[in-house]
Image (tube, rainbow, N blue to C red):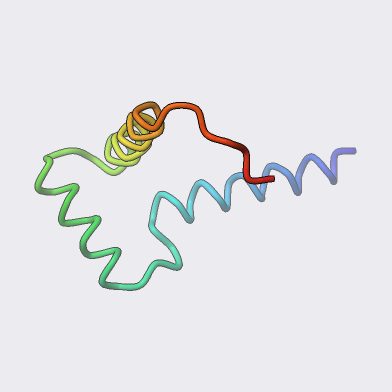
Length: 69
């Protein structure tokens, strides 16, 4: 069980690090996001929270939608 928990923890850690540092994004996209952070004057963690909050607001504006499953 410890081995499985270790894998789950490392997968979670990798996902957090990759998202925090924009790993895998094209350079142009990464540069645009970093410039937007500077323009807003907020740090990376707050910027990611800001993006998620704005997405949540957009979803709420759409109202209920059908599941795509």
